[in-house]
Image 1: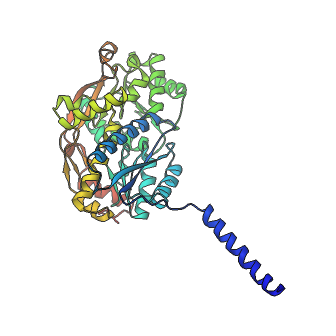
Image 2: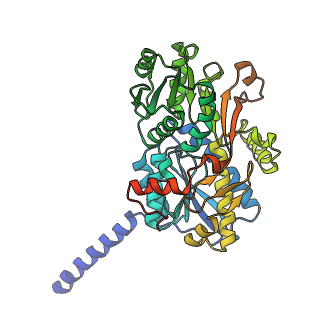
Image 3: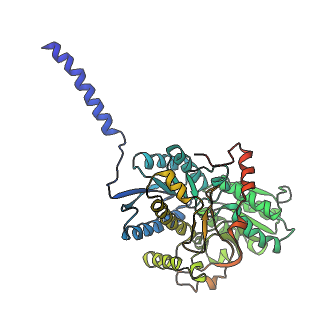
Length: 426
């Protein structure tokens, strides 16, 4: 009897330990047969939280519309949200959890190129899809590009190209100073703008790097003031840009130099305020008035539905999130399956028209090639005439996507410099 007891006890203990481990370990959460889960990896908190909120709102709107029309291949969408905090490490952890535990076939989102690139790497490892919603670094579809990542928004090169045409006409031969966020988007944006404005000489056109999440820009702005430039370029985004522009305005720099913010969303302009933003130059791939100016039925419907639901207009971040979900649905339905590579092939080279004129998912780099715009912020009295006080932009230059985007030969050269293959690898 004692021998049987001694034999049974270790087995029971082992069984209890195994069961305990299984219960404690993260378990996959399969979707119901009539549901497909899709991950939104976005900044709910942190310096880019406003841009994240706009993405979530627009994504929710797209989900509601798609589900009301029958879903994707008969499956209703269930969005699964994760907060990146605009931190690449957190974004990577989220992506692993979304793919492994939630079993999503696709993730979209990002308000930081470091976040987008990190999420994209996980997608490649898992052989699943990632769509960059708000990622402007050229590296996203350049050095770091692969078959499993697509970018719906424009990149910093496209922004610099359309903006530089205006700057060269109006500030040719002038002195620049750059205050730049110290990560991949900041570096590549500054590099592109320097290239296209002929300000690559850093002794003549000085600059300084700042940490993402900086609140006090007094020191870098003082350095800029001492340099006495004609053009002050603030390569800052989200809350950082709001703080930088407001503090430049408070220091009286706007009356002494032209302020340029290479990339901007409407909520960033709103955060800085119309007085601080007046006359600031920027670029954007989309703005809420564009559908009405171009008579885009889909675009006008999106803006009106968004405004009715949230009592404000969507930004370009929201527009991109909305388009991605719709484009994913269409690609899956063309492929007749959620299988990743079949959907990739359905996307590559595909032309689409959603909230403005025609765009294309370019095959060689997965960049959405599209028309881009340089803008100048309006006078405060004009901004305030609008119902939501969000009419900030006056378009000062327009450029076709094929003229703004990197060419195939240029792209191959960029890839060769870092030892990346001349075609997208799986």
